[in-house]
Image 1 (tube, rainbow, N blue to C red):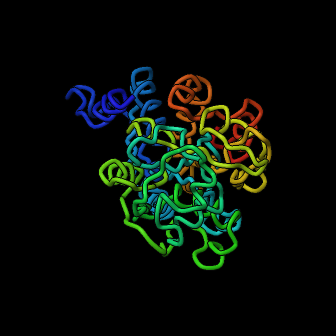
Image 2: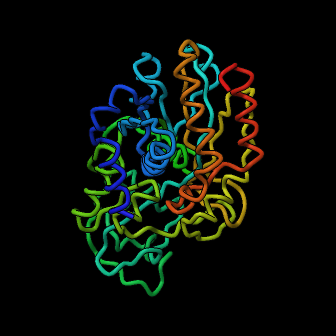
Length: 337
């Protein structure tokens, strides 16, 4: 998959032939790194089919919100849904595009993907800096028979404003009262411990290089970088593997309401098969950019019709058909579809 994404990135930045450069239509977007692999793959396919180019800057959800609020792009993208009252205040539209999962990953010698089990208490303790060794009794109790080293844990987190961080910290605040009280949730927080990397890419690189580290990533980045994900205990008490099926189970638990501009979190979802740190990623449009909105909506309508197989291959969950229709009706009501 790494070669595939690298190829896509090359396509997105290469210059067009001189005869087409002026004729080609371009959609400019910016924001979340979480969906970058699937947006890039869709963009490559869409350009081949329509000659319309998508220029997407993977700069983090905070940057995506700022750019659409400032009207410097055709669309912004954020993994943290913007509250309905803010959507109204900033004169925006918001709709979901795809569902995925945020996954803790570790670099511990001898630990393979899916071998290490953590629950909400141990994960919270690690990121609070209270659990500092992989040999801690709480971690050993969850992993009988697994050889865990008496090595210091290095926490890796995002350094930029991030929807991935918003999903992860919202989960911690939901399941851990101490985290909610001391740190809170959001695209950027004051981390009690650890080192920061920019974007999902930066966190992945730090975890790869730093032995005995733990970080959090969108699952496609974990797979792309061949990092060892954990099994995490969910709300039903089951230790769950991050997968298309477990993200899908989490997505099925939520009701996206167009009257609230689809505002919804999917963290700590009910159900024995649900991955507990799941979330939709959202597209933001400016109400006064009708021409931009029409061409952006055409792209995402195409993705809804033709992009499901690509999303699944990259371990993202396409929106259910009924939700796609609610999004299309939302577009119609705004006069942009």
